Image 1: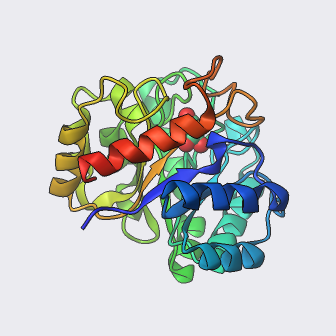
Image 2: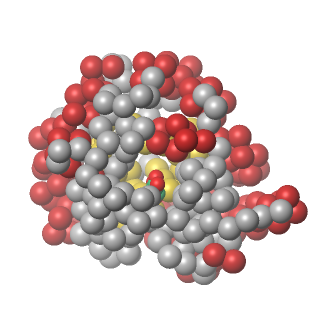
Length: 283
Ligand code: LER
Protein backbone atom coordinates (compact mmCIF):
# COMPACT_ATOMS: atom_id res chain seq x y z
CA UNK A 1 0.00 0.00 0.00
CA UNK A 2 1.67 3.29 -1.06
CA UNK A 3 2.13 5.99 1.55
CA UNK A 4 0.06 9.17 1.70
CA UNK A 5 1.79 11.94 -0.23
CA UNK A 6 1.44 15.42 1.28
CA UNK A 7 2.61 18.85 0.18
CA UNK A 8 3.61 21.77 2.39
CA UNK A 9 1.87 25.02 1.44
CA UNK A 10 5.27 26.72 1.90
CA UNK A 11 5.93 25.46 -1.64
CA UNK A 12 3.68 28.33 -2.75
CA UNK A 13 3.14 30.86 0.01
CA UNK A 14 4.02 32.26 3.43
CA UNK A 15 2.37 32.82 5.79
CA UNK A 16 -0.52 30.45 5.11
CA UNK A 17 -3.84 32.21 5.82
CA UNK A 18 -7.54 31.44 5.48
CA UNK A 19 -7.49 33.36 2.18
CA UNK A 20 -4.68 31.30 0.62
CA UNK A 21 -5.57 27.95 2.15
CA UNK A 22 -8.62 27.10 0.07
CA UNK A 23 -7.13 27.69 -3.41
CA UNK A 24 -3.95 25.84 -2.42
CA UNK A 25 -5.90 22.91 -0.99
CA UNK A 26 -7.86 22.65 -4.24
CA UNK A 27 -4.69 22.88 -6.31
CA UNK A 28 -2.91 20.21 -4.25
CA UNK A 29 -5.88 17.86 -4.41
CA UNK A 30 -6.08 18.43 -8.17
CA UNK A 31 -2.43 17.38 -8.51
CA UNK A 32 -3.15 14.14 -6.67
CA UNK A 33 -1.82 15.05 -3.24
CA UNK A 34 -3.66 13.33 -0.40
CA UNK A 35 -2.70 15.58 2.51
CA UNK A 36 -1.47 19.09 3.26
CA UNK A 37 1.32 20.18 5.56
CA UNK A 38 -0.13 23.30 7.16
CA UNK A 39 2.43 25.75 8.61
CA UNK A 40 0.98 27.75 11.48
CA UNK A 41 3.32 30.75 11.53
CA UNK A 42 1.12 32.93 13.75
CA UNK A 43 -1.73 31.59 15.83
CA UNK A 44 -4.95 32.63 14.13
CA UNK A 45 -3.53 32.82 10.58
CA UNK A 46 -5.97 30.08 9.59
CA UNK A 47 -8.99 28.68 11.31
CA UNK A 48 -8.69 24.98 12.20
CA UNK A 49 -12.45 24.26 12.23
CA UNK A 50 -13.06 25.77 8.78
CA UNK A 51 -9.93 24.07 7.50
CA UNK A 52 -11.06 20.71 8.81
CA UNK A 53 -14.32 21.00 6.85
CA UNK A 54 -12.54 22.17 3.70
CA UNK A 55 -10.03 19.31 3.82
CA UNK A 56 -12.78 16.78 4.51
CA UNK A 57 -14.66 18.00 1.42
CA UNK A 58 -11.52 17.56 -0.67
CA UNK A 59 -10.56 14.22 0.92
CA UNK A 60 -7.26 15.65 2.20
CA UNK A 61 -5.47 14.74 5.43
CA UNK A 62 -3.42 17.24 7.46
CA UNK A 63 -0.11 17.62 9.23
CA UNK A 64 0.48 20.80 11.21
CA UNK A 65 3.95 22.36 10.84
CA UNK A 66 5.33 24.65 13.52
CA UNK A 67 7.46 27.56 12.35
CA UNK A 68 10.46 28.38 14.49
CA UNK A 69 10.86 32.04 13.52
CA UNK A 70 12.93 34.60 15.44
CA UNK A 71 12.87 34.15 19.26
CA UNK A 72 10.94 30.85 19.06
CA UNK A 73 13.12 28.57 21.15
CA UNK A 74 13.03 26.03 23.96
CA UNK A 75 16.55 27.20 24.86
CA UNK A 76 16.59 30.49 26.75
CA UNK A 77 19.73 31.79 25.07
CA UNK A 78 17.96 31.87 21.68
CA UNK A 79 14.46 33.05 22.51
CA UNK A 80 11.45 33.20 24.76
CA UNK A 81 10.84 29.73 26.19
CA UNK A 82 7.45 30.40 27.81
CA UNK A 83 6.04 32.02 24.68
CA UNK A 84 7.38 29.11 22.62
CA UNK A 85 5.79 26.53 24.91
CA UNK A 86 2.50 28.44 24.59
CA UNK A 87 2.92 28.57 20.81
CA UNK A 88 3.53 24.80 20.64
CA UNK A 89 0.47 24.16 22.83
CA UNK A 90 -1.55 26.23 20.35
CA UNK A 91 -0.13 24.17 17.48
CA UNK A 92 -1.24 21.01 19.33
CA UNK A 93 -4.75 22.43 19.77
CA UNK A 94 -4.86 23.37 16.08
CA UNK A 95 -3.73 19.85 15.13
CA UNK A 96 -6.45 18.32 17.25
CA UNK A 97 -9.07 20.64 15.79
CA UNK A 98 -7.99 20.05 12.18
CA UNK A 99 -7.66 16.29 12.70
CA UNK A 100 -3.86 16.10 12.34
CA UNK A 101 -1.96 13.43 14.29
CA UNK A 102 1.38 15.22 14.02
CA UNK A 103 2.89 18.67 14.61
CA UNK A 104 6.29 18.74 12.88
CA UNK A 105 9.23 21.14 13.06
CA UNK A 106 12.60 21.91 14.65
CA UNK A 107 11.22 22.58 18.13
CA UNK A 108 14.37 23.65 19.92
CA UNK A 109 15.75 26.90 18.42
CA UNK A 110 14.93 29.49 15.76
CA UNK A 111 15.70 28.21 12.26
CA UNK A 112 18.85 29.85 10.92
CA UNK A 113 20.33 30.77 14.33
CA UNK A 114 23.60 29.02 15.15
CA UNK A 115 26.20 29.33 17.89
CA UNK A 116 29.26 27.44 19.11
CA UNK A 117 29.00 25.11 22.12
CA UNK A 118 31.58 23.29 24.20
CA UNK A 119 30.77 19.70 25.16
CA UNK A 120 29.59 20.90 28.58
CA UNK A 121 27.43 23.63 27.07
CA UNK A 122 25.93 21.11 24.67
CA UNK A 123 25.12 18.73 27.52
CA UNK A 124 23.43 21.59 29.39
CA UNK A 125 21.51 22.66 26.26
CA UNK A 126 20.18 19.12 25.80
CA UNK A 127 19.10 19.00 29.44
CA UNK A 128 17.37 22.38 29.11
CA UNK A 129 15.68 21.27 25.90
CA UNK A 130 14.29 18.13 27.55
CA UNK A 131 13.06 20.08 30.59
CA UNK A 132 11.30 22.68 28.49
CA UNK A 133 9.91 20.17 26.01
CA UNK A 134 8.57 17.81 28.67
CA UNK A 135 5.40 19.78 29.62
CA UNK A 136 4.62 20.38 25.94
CA UNK A 137 5.15 16.68 25.19
CA UNK A 138 2.70 15.85 28.00
CA UNK A 139 0.13 18.19 26.42
CA UNK A 140 0.70 16.54 23.05
CA UNK A 141 0.28 13.06 24.49
CA UNK A 142 -2.91 14.08 26.29
CA UNK A 143 -4.27 15.45 23.00
CA UNK A 144 -3.33 12.31 21.07
CA UNK A 145 -0.86 14.32 18.97
CA UNK A 146 2.84 13.63 18.35
CA UNK A 147 5.43 16.39 18.21
CA UNK A 148 7.76 15.32 15.38
CA UNK A 149 11.05 17.07 16.09
CA UNK A 150 13.21 17.73 13.08
CA UNK A 151 17.01 17.77 13.02
CA UNK A 152 18.25 20.48 10.64
CA UNK A 153 21.51 20.85 8.76
CA UNK A 154 24.46 22.59 10.41
CA UNK A 155 23.89 25.89 8.60
CA UNK A 156 20.39 26.25 10.05
CA UNK A 157 21.02 25.08 13.61
CA UNK A 158 23.82 24.06 15.92
CA UNK A 159 21.53 22.09 18.27
CA UNK A 160 20.32 18.89 16.52
CA UNK A 161 21.89 18.03 13.16
CA UNK A 162 21.81 14.24 13.00
CA UNK A 163 19.49 11.37 13.80
CA UNK A 164 21.98 10.01 16.34
CA UNK A 165 22.15 13.34 18.21
CA UNK A 166 18.36 13.63 18.14
CA UNK A 167 17.79 10.09 19.44
CA UNK A 168 20.29 10.73 22.26
CA UNK A 169 18.86 14.12 23.17
CA UNK A 170 15.21 13.09 23.10
CA UNK A 171 15.50 9.48 24.34
CA UNK A 172 13.64 9.97 27.65
CA UNK A 173 10.71 11.62 25.85
CA UNK A 174 10.43 9.50 22.73
CA UNK A 175 7.12 7.72 22.36
CA UNK A 176 5.24 9.92 24.83
CA UNK A 177 3.97 12.52 22.41
CA UNK A 178 7.43 12.93 20.87
CA UNK A 179 9.04 11.45 17.76
CA UNK A 180 11.38 12.56 15.00
CA UNK A 181 10.63 14.33 11.73
CA UNK A 182 13.20 13.33 9.14
CA UNK A 183 13.75 15.52 6.09
CA UNK A 184 15.70 14.08 3.15
CA UNK A 185 17.22 17.52 2.47
CA UNK A 186 18.88 17.67 5.89
CA UNK A 187 19.75 13.94 5.91
CA UNK A 188 21.62 14.43 2.63
CA UNK A 189 23.79 17.15 4.16
CA UNK A 190 24.44 15.65 7.60
CA UNK A 191 24.29 11.86 7.46
CA UNK A 192 27.07 9.66 6.12
CA UNK A 193 24.36 7.43 4.67
CA UNK A 194 20.82 8.84 4.80
CA UNK A 195 19.24 5.40 4.43
CA UNK A 196 21.18 4.05 7.43
CA UNK A 197 20.08 7.05 9.48
CA UNK A 198 16.44 6.32 8.59
CA UNK A 199 16.88 2.70 9.67
CA UNK A 200 18.53 3.84 12.92
CA UNK A 201 15.63 6.18 13.65
CA UNK A 202 13.23 3.21 13.24
CA UNK A 203 10.08 3.46 15.30
CA UNK A 204 10.98 6.98 16.50
CA UNK A 205 10.06 8.37 13.06
CA UNK A 206 6.82 10.34 13.38
CA UNK A 207 6.95 12.23 10.10
CA UNK A 208 9.03 12.36 6.91
CA UNK A 209 9.62 15.32 4.62
CA UNK A 210 11.03 14.95 1.12
CA UNK A 211 12.47 17.13 -1.63
CA UNK A 212 15.37 17.03 -4.05
CA UNK A 213 18.89 17.36 -2.68
CA UNK A 214 18.83 20.96 -4.01
CA UNK A 215 15.40 21.51 -2.44
CA UNK A 216 13.88 21.22 -5.90
CA UNK A 217 11.67 18.44 -7.23
CA UNK A 218 11.95 14.86 -5.98
CA UNK A 219 13.54 12.61 -8.59
CA UNK A 220 15.57 15.24 -10.47
CA UNK A 221 18.45 15.12 -7.97
CA UNK A 222 21.20 12.83 -6.77
CA UNK A 223 19.20 11.24 -3.92
CA UNK A 224 19.04 7.44 -4.16
CA UNK A 225 15.24 7.42 -3.89
CA UNK A 226 14.71 3.65 -4.21
CA UNK A 227 17.14 3.17 -1.32
CA UNK A 228 15.34 5.83 0.77
CA UNK A 229 12.03 4.02 0.21
CA UNK A 230 13.63 0.67 1.14
CA UNK A 231 14.98 2.25 4.33
CA UNK A 232 11.55 3.65 5.22
CA UNK A 233 10.13 0.17 4.68
CA UNK A 234 12.83 -1.35 6.89
CA UNK A 235 12.17 1.29 9.56
CA UNK A 236 8.49 0.31 9.50
CA UNK A 237 7.45 3.87 8.68
CA UNK A 238 4.06 3.88 6.89
CA UNK A 239 3.12 7.52 7.57
CA UNK A 240 2.94 10.36 5.06
CA UNK A 241 5.75 11.76 2.93
CA UNK A 242 5.45 15.53 2.82
CA UNK A 243 7.02 17.51 0.00
CA UNK A 244 8.63 20.55 1.60
CA UNK A 245 10.23 23.33 -0.38
CA UNK A 246 9.89 27.08 -0.34
CA UNK A 247 9.36 30.08 -2.52
CA UNK A 248 11.99 32.78 -2.18
CA UNK A 249 9.15 34.99 -0.91
CA UNK A 250 8.71 32.93 2.25
CA UNK A 251 8.78 35.49 5.07
CA UNK A 252 9.74 33.09 7.88
CA UNK A 253 12.03 30.47 6.40
CA UNK A 254 13.42 31.58 3.01
CA UNK A 255 16.39 33.45 4.47
CA UNK A 256 17.03 30.83 7.16
CA UNK A 257 16.89 28.06 4.53
CA UNK A 258 18.92 30.12 1.99
CA UNK A 259 16.42 29.95 -0.85
CA UNK A 260 17.96 32.51 -3.22
CA UNK A 261 16.76 31.26 -6.60
CA UNK A 262 13.78 29.44 -8.08
CA UNK A 263 14.30 25.71 -7.58
CA UNK A 264 12.09 24.65 -10.50
CA UNK A 265 10.56 26.36 -13.56
CA UNK A 266 7.59 27.14 -11.30
CA UNK A 267 6.34 26.09 -7.88
CA UNK A 268 3.49 24.18 -9.57
CA UNK A 269 6.06 22.26 -11.63
CA UNK A 270 8.05 21.47 -8.48
CA UNK A 271 4.95 20.01 -6.84
CA UNK A 272 3.64 18.20 -9.93
CA UNK A 273 7.00 16.62 -10.82
CA UNK A 274 7.55 15.52 -7.23
CA UNK A 275 4.29 13.65 -6.83
CA UNK A 276 4.81 12.06 -10.21
CA UNK A 277 8.26 10.83 -9.15
CA UNK A 278 7.06 9.61 -5.76
CA UNK A 279 4.20 7.66 -7.34
CA UNK A 280 6.56 6.18 -9.94
CA UNK A 281 8.76 4.97 -7.05
CA UNK A 282 5.77 3.29 -5.41
CA UNK A 283 6.70 5.25 -2.31
C1 LER B 1 14.03 24.38 7.16
O1 LER B 1 15.17 24.05 6.50
C2 LER B 1 13.14 23.21 7.26
O2 LER B 1 13.42 22.13 6.82
C3 LER B 1 11.85 23.41 7.91
O3 LER B 1 11.16 22.20 8.07
C4 LER B 1 12.00 24.15 9.17
O4 LER B 1 10.79 24.47 9.71
